[in-house]
Length: 560
Image (tube, helix red, strand yellow):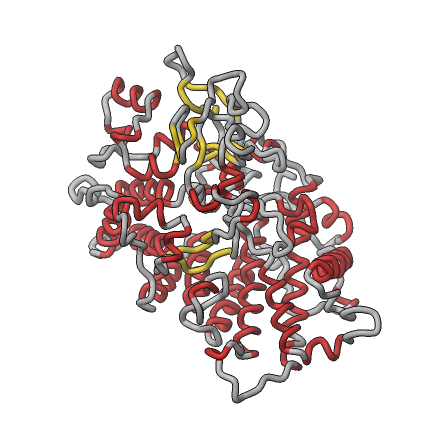
């Protein structure tokens, strides 16, 4: 890989970030005539500061401009590091934000010279190098053995385990986006400036080993509830399962999902005050006030600006980062459990044109805001050409729909909507349960009672009836059900892109016309755009051209 450029970017990024936070590049000195590198690593306070910096490139929900996030200092490096906006790369949504350009990827015209893809590649490798530097120096710090963790002093081995988990996670992200990659597990010497891509088996084995080893020195759960953004055993186990899911290794994926379940510390969130809205409340501040047992790993403040970036522009200059598609709405069942495909042609067309949320899975109304619907005291004016909300207008919805998840009243009380502190859930217990169910189905273990038990748990929390055992009794029908449940339960949480890739359904769901809401005085849906998907190429992103040209050992992905 282009290690020289990555090292250079690493030094630049680290320097800028630490200047913002009152520190300087930890690779050299803190500041002129101040802390040397040797003194830096001895200080446990600085060691903790460096660790917190390693968390900053963890993806969030929506774009967050804050000194706590590395994206602020790297401009467009934030592209594709946002799970909610990334839904615009799938059949769930259409990107509306002016700070993200997904059209090359959805129109089938992506190239290896795309700046946004190059930046995300460089950013991930930069922080991987910083993790290596940390792991080769952390042992120099001296801790008072008489201090206990509950007194606020963390174990140096635990901090190292967090850095190790982070390094593995950043490799995992690169692998799911670009395919087999090099593995960087130490600070490279000048003779190691050009690396080759490892085989898929080698990459998977290394990531799994790193997460498993890291888990041995991590707590079962965060020492304080406010630190759900820190890596734990449960987070390591969940992401090992997630990785095995991505490559269809069902036995291992199921086994690691079971390890998460066996910890007996996670559960689906249930609102003590408003049980019927437990699903929607799970994504709001109230869930954290009630110490939600569902969150396994979060991005600190990762949804802090979601209210601002998902609201219509007519309401306090909302940004509408991504808008739901008609295809997304069609995925929701009726309240009685029937799908649109089970209806007569006339009924199916009716619900396709008139989604009618009151007749549907309650998650539809909790997730999506409809044209002219009053939500949080505001009614969007999507069909009024004089309104800022007018469909397709700058920063407005391109489909006529908006996202409700994470949008909350508490942030609306802020004078500045960009200063919210809501966490974003990168991994939650519902994902683990769905992982287990899918694995059991794919392994043909249809007699496993947990398949129905876990699906019923998720559906019941949402206000849906239990799974119809007679209708969903075969592997084919259960596969159809669990895939639909993943789509609606995890809508706009950033999992759909990975699901499309691992199920290899891109040519089916991404090679089509995209539609939005029903147009006024018409029985037709609003046409948004035409998408193209090449299954021989588009399941992977291109390795950046700058990487290819500077490293003759780096092999480009097919078709680019």
